[in-house]
Image: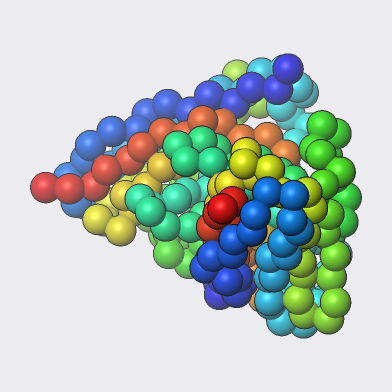
Length: 111
Length: 116
């Protein structure tokens, strides 16, 4: 099962917006709307931030939004805050495996 | 409140075995698919195994197929992962998580260290 491709790191200043990309293939990201995004702070369990490409679970700030174009999904965080500094992982359903697949993760640094 | 509590991790020698457990509460356990996801130290997330609500469908990552066995006991609201023939590369924090293609609930994880 091949991992989805994410940038290793992104950074932004408080108040700015950043976007994290997640590139797959037509067998996963491009073919289905089962793309999720997770936030993970050091030493903590991942937290679901976006599901089915663009839906936010209850309690997740509307500063977090998701989208997809072709084989690439994106997570955008607007109005960056210090507490957004964390690792972010995308995941997707994939027809080439019986399990979901994760991206390699992106470390977000708030400058 | 949904709670998932893993246990059973520890230090084991290469070739050894370990059984992880995940105790679930706060929801109707028998209605949901469950998963094991692991994270090696300093690395990303890896989907290890999943099991459907009635145990009818069971899936494994290629990296653990033939060595790990997932199971559940709906009467005890518990999920298990039997890990045999452990290797150094199985060293990771193992999380149990509820869901199918999105995982809204996770446990705190249990650390498995495979080392001589």
